[in-house]
Length: 271
Image (cartoon, rainbow, N blue to C red):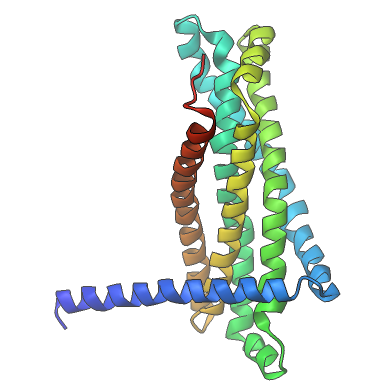
């Protein structure tokens, strides 16, 4: 087989896998919708909420705080050089709320939660537990995918809120406490520049990010190759796909939301 044929075969496999992913996503969403009135689904979702939300909270808060601190450290010298250190609060807090908070939280969620989900479900796939559920007449996607999807979507924005709050706090501590920036203009510009749309943008992004992480992890687990090596490969692929999806979605969501804001309220100008 020549290189051109190899490339064509690999392309067809990727296109087929892409279509398979969307079919898997549609089936999972349909199974979730059908099971919303079932008490068992919410019981399983609560268990996943503890694993996904409660255990991830310390990591998110620490990461968010140091994101704000690093932003302040990197920006304060440049702002002081041009006599605009008072606007530092608006820049740091706006960056945390719109971009770095949601994106870095989603990347951490993909690493901690996505990898764990892929490993758990991939092991069930390898040991034929998923096939056993089908043999007993149960829907594996309703019992395994739906609780994880709901937990990720419901708790993703909450985790981002905690990360954002800690990022704002970390930026304030470094700017005011270490570099002696005047706190009055620091908060004045923050209140002037940050709108509800910025907060909503970050939270809306987290919904898409967390849902993508859950679906990518579950899809890779349900298509996991046999053996321990297959589980490890599925975990790696789930993390890579999740991170790439986060960045791609971030770009298109930014373009869409900025266009929507300009259409309804006019172009945004920071003064």
